[in-house]
Length: 135
Image 1: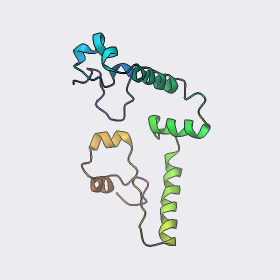
Image 2: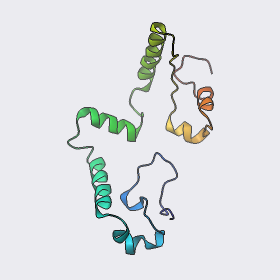
Image 3: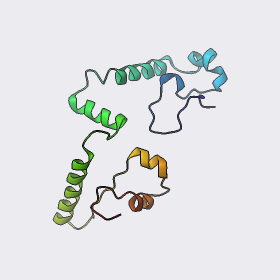
């Protein structure tokens, strides 16, 4: 089963319904998609796209905020104050208990795709923004 020629290389890209996975060779997509997939699958893919395009109409404010954060990222969302608060939370919880040491790492998508860390340790050593450490 081949992927559509417009299938994105990034796992973070939002897929259009017409490029999503199809259970056959791409050459058969146009003539046999409706025969090989349950009709509800195509309908659901289109409904999800419509829901996204509408700005998540009828979703609660919290759900809309989470969905926007998940699919649009941190851009313009005051990252620095949030990271300061997260660092403070880690310090507070570590003061209150010592069984587990809490820490955080901030990794923006653009840098992740540029540097392509191979392990979690690579993340910890390469991404030090907002940690209060000298780089």
